[in-house]
Length: 328
Ligand code: SF4
Image (cartoon, rainbow, N blue to C red; front, side, top):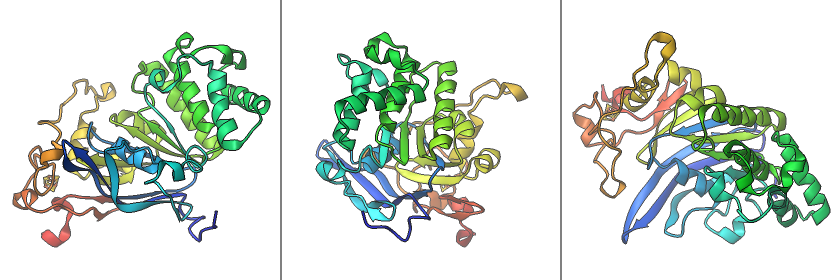
């Protein structure tokens, strides 16, 4: 692959990306004009409610969009070179070797009738061209790396706990030495203790292997411990981006403020969850102007008319008319 002048700057760049779904023969924009970039070793969280576009973003990056979805604008670059994400076949040499995914619900993602060591060895044979014996050795090393004794490799997925199965998913994602791991709600189906263990494991592996991580979650509380930067998504757009401590301490977008307020904090006596009023928007009937305006407690007249741009604000970016100095 051609070396890029951006090689030392960004590992992965998502540049003005838009994805459209055909739903009941009606085109619906699932993500719109999304841009962000990731450096080696950096951890970025994509946070938002169901339908906000986070998983669509991950699937677009890996070229795994469903057949009724397509990229209608923008591009994705890895080390400065455009990825052929619109073609499943053209993406095969890139997927798992450069960018790989830890899916949620390992029980659905793993083959129930194949021993786990063989499942981990398979991408090593197919993508790295390792002979079977070497691939099995690599699979055992990977099991050890994620904290599973190699002799458990003979187990079938149903013989493992939910946490162990998620560790197997992480081992598979690491099999071909990728530089970017996407965790698509990797801890959603787990109890809180196992969730903390899996997040700790991902953090340790990230440091040890200098991986870049995109963590997709609807839960802001899992972001604080695991990520450097956070992007808040709403109705297919990024509405706020910033460093995790700053966004948690001083959220600027009204939606982020409500998300942060909805985290219970027993340490300061805040035990009650304050729900966000209203429902997420229907993408087939997106509200005019700022898509958050029907639920926003701070909405002003212009909000129902004009879509706010994602502009620089302090150290981060915000898409809200209240932070657009040209409107005041
Ligand atoms: Fe609320 Fe208006 Fe800002 Fe949207 S642009 S978040 S409706 S204040």
